Image (cartoon, rainbow, N blue to C red; front, side, top):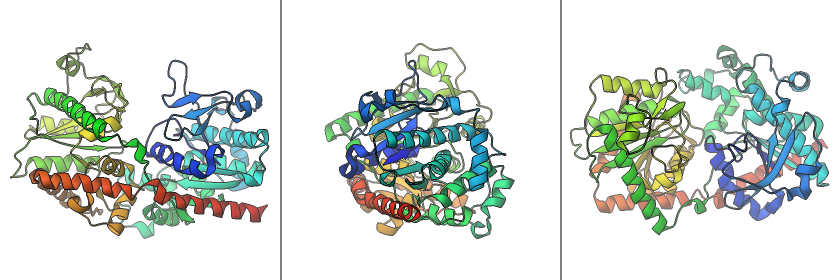
Length: 539
């Protein structure tokens, strides 16, 4: 069982969490027959923090396998629960030499690479190199092709699946889209996805939005896979409409309970995290934030509209105007952006040494593109318009890896410090951030446009005290009402007594246990069975 993703040992977004949390559950059946394939984008000066190299693995494959196009591999284990085997693929020499492969993909599958740009070539080069490695590893390990499953995640690995079908057809293939490239683009370009959903044609929209190559690749990978899957009913409907292929199986995203710290460690992290966040918040606010400040946050991929960053900001502005607001609120946007450096004056305020640069009092770090980053522009407009009050909004635009220079606490270690999270997504195939939040006992607000939100509505009561989750209904035209509803929900939580808050946090944890991979992994075994069955018929 080979699973290929750009996010193996390479945390970029939610797919990293999918893979790293489900690994141990898969290992219960597959053991070391489960092998993850990831990109070797690391160096001696910048090593992967989660890859532990072990050259003897897979019968010393790293030194014995001869690969074309100067492709090389490193074998090791992923430093996550279960420590699964990982093969990192050095694929960069294949870039710039893809024309022959693009031609083959056009002739055999109709993939249009002519209009490609940006990260298309890099993704395709990694995907094809990974497919070459999978075939070579199977031969090296003397595994029959009919006993191989090659699982590819997202359009960035789709060409690898097609390469396997063309050059290693005995293997069974699975393709998982976590979000369609064209659906994400429709939303990211400010178009109404839901109001006109049944009228959208994926090919037509790809031409309009200059997404032809990515969309073409994703569509053909879905159509040619032995089993096509996606992560939620929301996205399954989207795949049917925009890709013209209905997923055979929906594989919801679970969570690994071992990521949650013990009670003692959790309490220590909560105390340390709150102290640090309030110190940073106070420095930026220019006043002392009280110890009972409500710390509310949003996080995830930097997609201003899709992830609801716009709605989060406007809901916090509405909360600031709430007539019954008595306590301080620190509202954090923990979303990676194009970071330049830690904010100089903030560093000095925090008794660090740094550059003496002008400080934006809503930024923990300076950006390379402060004049164009949407969240930055919105917060600057609020500041210049005289915004002030009980709700202090702070943009933390860095990867929280524990070494950012300001917060210096990793995201998972910081989660216990939060009192509430808000993820008001407009486009969210699953929604790992709210699931992570409740797994750490932090109640969350999400939307019915997220797969996770629909899972909650289908299985639980929609309130904090009994479920730890509040799901709001997002439409194309109810934005102001959404902002008011989130503000009102947050204000109500602020007014809750200690007993209600405790019940909400306990309910959040209890709900998250229903999303344990133990319950969701069976859907993957359904996909494996379908893929093996279809490959057997083909062979």
